[in-house]
Every structure is written in structure tokens, then in C-alpha cells.
Length: 178
Ligand code: SF4
Ligand code: SF4
Image (cartoon, rainbow, N blue to C red; front, side):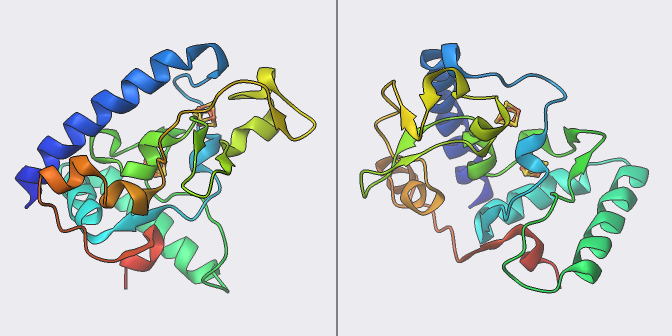
């Protein structure tokens, strides 16, 4: 299943790269910018999590220890399952498992139309980053991407069906660790 997922995520990434190119006038992502990984709940399906852990196992021992320490700290300080947190895989403002990151991670920065016709904007629009040059008074003055990039919609997309993937349940990243 992971081999199939790897092919799927390569195709999915090509689609995302195209969207980033099309929307480049409104995107401010650059190396070292990590606000999108500083506070969130990071939904991951079981399949994405298995892939992420492959990346984790390939990390140097000292980075693995740092991630484990981050995890422990978040778990110990967490009082509610609804609380947002900093992703434990974020080390020195960089994703330590970048090649293995999840579907939602790959969509950070993009504005897209949800199935209920509402627009999902990147959180960093409120920090003067992505789309802030075309967003004023709760109004986006340009067309968002006309495809829902919500995780659950992606798991039932044509692309996912073509690869016959079984994603399994979805949970907040931290909840995959006992
Ligand atoms: S999505 Fe926003 S916060 Fe994340 S890297 Fe891009 S500009 Fe920075
Ligand atoms: S896995 Fe990487 S890209 Fe995804 S939230 Fe964590 S640090 Fe950010």
C-alpha cells in the first residue's frame, strides 16, 4: 500500500505545484517560514502517518530524539484534544520529514473552494502573508482554486480512487502517538 501511496503523492504534489505556480502572485512561502506548522491540529490519515513514520525512521538519531522530546512535551502539556499545537516534526523552523509530509501540509498557503462553496484561506493571510495582498474586509478579490483540497475530500478524489488507496481513519497528528 505504501508503494501505491508514494506514486499517488507524487502525482498529487504535481497538481499542488501547478496550483502554487498559478497562484504565485498571492503566495509568500519561502524557506524558513514555518508559521503554518507552529499552530494547528494537523489531521493525518493512517496511511499518511505510516508514510510519515518512514521519513522519521530515516532521520539521524539526534533529530529523532528531538522529535520524540517535542512529542512528549506536547502530550504532557495538552489538556484538551481540541487544543492546537506546534508540530513536533518542526525542527529549527524546518520540516524534518519534508519529503514525507502529509496531504494537508502540502496545501498550506493555498486558498481553495470547499464543497460547501465556502473559501478556505490559509491561516497566514491574517499574518500579512499568503493572499493578504488580495484579501480585505473578509473578502477575497481573486478566484481561489476551484477544487477542495480538504484532506477528506482528497482521500475520496478520483486520483485516490485510481490508486485504490485505503487511507484508514484520520486523527490529529499527535493522537497517533500513544
Ligand atoms: S503557508 Fe504561510 S506560514 Fe506557511 S510557509 Fe507559506 S507563507 Fe509561511
Ligand atoms: S509534518 Fe512538516 S509540514 Fe507538516 S505540519 Fe509538521 S512540520 Fe509542518
